[in-house]
Amino acid sequence: MKDVKLNELSPAWRELYDAAVAARKNAYIPYSNFAVGAAVRCANGKIYGGCNVENASYGLCVCGERNAIFHAACAGEREMTELCVVADTSGPVSPCGACRQVMREFGIQTVILANMKGDFKITTVEELLPYGFEL
Image 1 (spheres, rainbow, N blue to C red):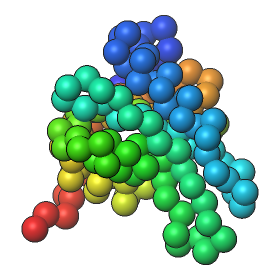
Image 2 (cartoon, rainbow, N blue to C red; image 1 turned 30 degrees about the vertical axis):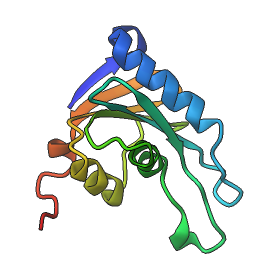
Image 3 (cartoon, helix red, strand yellow; image 1 turned 90 degrees about the horizontal axis):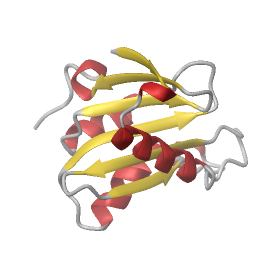
Image 4 (cartoon, one colour; image 1 turned 135 degrees about the horizontal axis):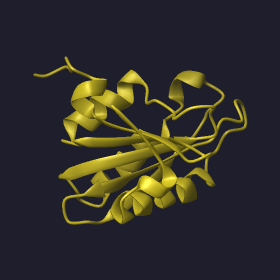
């Protein structure tokens, strides 16, 4: 896992971060007031955003990371390469276990953890979930 600052991001990673920040603005968060945005880049270069969507029945809430991946999947994408997730946290936000497993399912390699202050950690799904579930 590597710590980086906003000015150290490659243009491609900055584009992914900007898409995640834009998606975060659409978060439906009436219960926690904790907005999360995510963006996934596919092998063909297309980017799909997602935000967290809450529900009064908390178990039905869906994270921004999974919504971004599912958005891409709904568009027919199956090869995804990298994902950025952002929230207004003191340090870069970290995905939950369910999101890590879904990232692994779709072959995402690089994961950019970020906050709204411009702090980043660059990591891999393998580092986040070394022993993921497989059938």
